[in-house]
Image (spheres, one colour):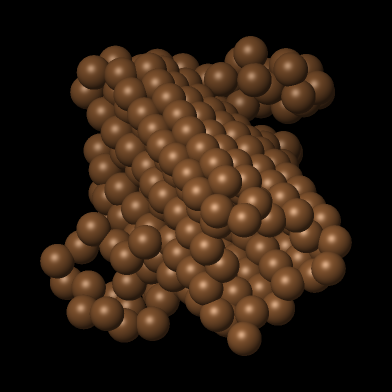
Length: 266
């Protein structure tokens, strides 16, 4: 039996399948389908003609716009019907025609989106992707399976993120980019075959990052371009020369496991 809070407002043309959990002050517009394993937290808004299915959890104050498809099975031929989930955080805006899939057994079983994200029209989040907080996916961005998108990332319209790629905190990807390697935190990436083109200085300044941290990041970025040893060797040496949490975060990102290698400064 479904659990529907008495304050929820559900259009009579929508279908709420047995087992769904609908929180307080939820609004569900006309011609929606809410599957039996769906859990909608308080004040979630589902606009008309949206489909929410699978083992899917949507956090408080999130709005799903019309014609979105949320929680369907992965577009992965290896998927054999195993039990996997989609977890979406609070205060997200999921615009028209967005598609988001549940995870796969081989990828950890959970696709996850954080809080305060904006997924613009026709964006896609594939199986096992891990999306942080305050991420913006502009129109028609495609995030492939197993990707990790850290907090405060912006990905420009019509860009594609290759499977297993990591994009570090605060990075920005220009429109029409195909990203096939990991992107450093606070980096600026652009071009049809995406290239590392510097730091996201505009984003850093907008967030009020202290000037000293920005200067240290700029100097660290220059040191990554040249010097002896591998890219990881040069990154490791940054810890000896800089005293900045932002540089330390960049070093930690480089030293972590990478399945795709890195976009490196030229």
